[in-house]
Length: 308
Image (cartoon, rainbow, N blue to C red):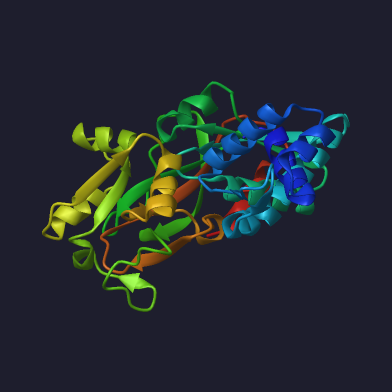
């Protein structure tokens, strides 16, 4: 996501016109139109309704729901740029999985941590979940948020004992299903649902997760949990993580499993319900290299822990 895209979204909403907003930001109208589309694709949300009037548009309900997060992100980056020019400011690079964390979660981390620690700068870098550890070892980031599935009858452990890293536990999250406003699966009761009630549902699965599952490599254990409950899950595969939310919000198709912390998984048009008898959960950690002397690692860990 480029900052200019978000700045253009805010200016377009203020002016109610792409062409006027483009002029104010000194970019061409055609470039501005592409940037709006890029922002919508990145957020998997239609931000504006185009009318038959020349250049006329209005922000969608989903766009208005995202507007406070967009404003926070632009403001946080503006303050970050100012702090980056201040030699006394401190930066910590945080690695996150692009398969798990959306734009709204990243915005809450950036803005919330800055408000609490204005002398600190958090720079978020996105990686595939499987490459997070390598990014940390190669010094591309100072800290990562790492998650893994664990069966409920297993001891809580971590898979980093042979690596030169320090691991700190953030918390556990029960497995939930996510579904769109237009698609509510049967069997929901008080925000919960049982595994067998999901038997006839179609699950939207990231292609990479499906490939790993076919090779016997389980990032999460959800597909096996379905089979252990007595049914073969119906799978609809999509190419990347953003397509999951897009498939749900635009077509209302299917559901997908979610283990993101409650405080960081907000998305317009998406609802969540806990699977009350799912036999596993997700464990989250922060991981840093041994000998890492980056400031604010303790503070960032404690800040993230509040979401669990």
